Length: 347
Image (cartoon, rainbow, N blue to C red):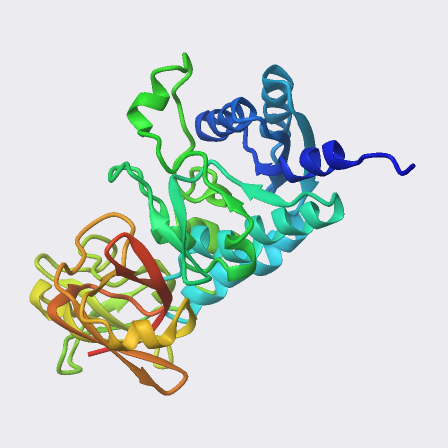
C-alpha cells in the first residue's frame, strides 16, 4: 500500500524564502510568516562587501528560529547596478539604483534560490501588497501611506508576483518600530556608504570634464566641473547662480542648461523599457495616475496614455515638476500598479 504523502505536500506548500537583511522590516516579516505557519528560509543577499551586515542577519535569523542562507551577489550587483549608475550619470541621466536592484537583483535571486530549493513562495520586508484580478497579478499599495513601497517594485514580473507573499502589506511602520529597542535604519543608496554620489563616481573612474553652463537661449552663463555632478531641478552646487535651476543636461555637448523653476513643469513624458500588466487597461482607462518620484511632489490628476514608438506617451493636465531622463515613471489605477517605465524624454 503506498505511503500517504499528503503531509509532505502540505509542508512543501508552506515553505517561503524571505529576503532578509536582519533589519526591523525583514525581522518582522520573518516573525509574521512563522506565526502563520510558514517554514521560512531567510536569504541575505550581499550586494557590497559588508561582513557586519551578514553576521547580524545570520544572528537575527537564529534568534527568530529560521534557517539562514547567505548569497554573494557582489559581482552581479557591480555589473548590473553600480556600472549602470555610473554610465547613466556620465550620459546625463538620473538613475534609480534601488528600483533597478529590486527588478534585476533581489527578486531574481530570491526566485533563483527558491527554484533551487523547490520553495514555492517568495517574500520580503517591503511594505506593499499583491492583488490578482482576472488571472493577472498587480503590485498594490501597502496600507501605510507613509511607508508604501509599491513605487519601487513596478518592474516585478508576473512570474514573480504570482509566487509572492506580502507579510508587511497590512503593517504600519510606526507601530512595527515600537517593538524594537534598536530602531536605527540604513538610508540612502547602499553602495555610496555615506559618500556623495559625485565623489563615488570619480572614485569609479567617471570622467568629470569641465564645460559650459548655458541658459535656455544657449548663451553661456558659466562653467561647470562635470555634468555628472548635476541633476534636473538642482539649485545648489558649483557654478549655479542664485535663482537658477538645472533644467537640462546635454551630455553630447557637455553642457548644463539652467533656467527658472517654472521651466521644469512638463506636460508630456515619454517612457520606454516598460513593464505593463495589461496594455488594453492602460490605454483605455480614464483614471490612470502617475508617480515619478518616491518622495516629493507628483501630479495628482489622471493622465492619458498612448502607445508611442517603443514605449508610451504620457500626457498630463497636471504637469510633472522636474522629471529627469533615466527616472522611473510608475502608473497607478487607484491602489494598483498597472505598469511603469523609464523616462526617455519630456516636453
